[in-house]
Length: 288
Image 1 (cartoon, rainbow, N blue to C red):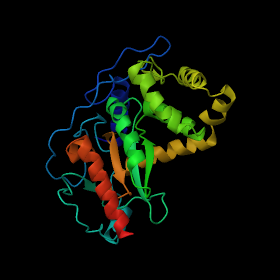
Image 2 (image 1 turned 45 degrees about the vertical axis):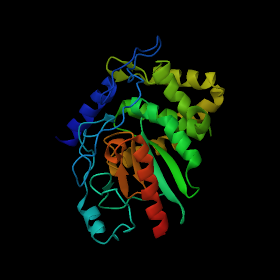
Image 3 (image 1 turned 90 degrees about the horizontal axis):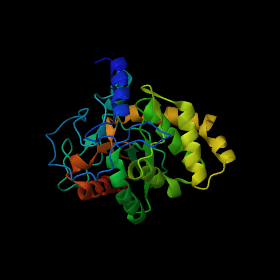
């Protein structure tokens, strides 16, 4: 399927709600469907080895096909990229519990630190269910692990949800309001991204986002300073590119130090997921 059709179909899927989620009722001023806030079941046994994740093959929110391919230049770089560290990973198997990228992706952490990226979407019920576990893990993880949240961007719906995330981040309120957005959408069934006539209504979405943030202590003036600024637009472009480079075809997914991709199903469950992420991060930390 060509990229145009993939992105077109991706937009339709995100609007309808992806994966195994069913849309909850929308609030009076927002017509966007949102996945039902059911807790994610523990993932089934790991799949057969694969060189890269199969689009739509994992539990969670997903799109139809992988949205990025390795270019000839990237392939040439891969040929000269050092092999991953060969530390003991015990029971974890490459191609079963995690995928190693053919080309290591850039990281934003200094030497001695290991970056862990969570690819998420506010409309994802599995991400909502996982958020308390991530918050607990973030408090208990070693100081040398740096957690970075990445809102995936597949289409206009996910773009506007990502815009809300970067607005909150720009206000310095991620710790206070990130989980609150999930609760607003999935527990209170009040979608913030508004869909009308099969398209995102940007004016209504901006109004809903402003009302949500003002209700949570943000001034209207501070909202305006972040919502459609150059800085926010630049972050959105970077997030869209990262979603492609990391091959994030569903949510939630985790990228460890730009080298390894995994999720709950590949790991064998939620408890195993955080153990695996920790072990992969330790492997990279020991190699530095």
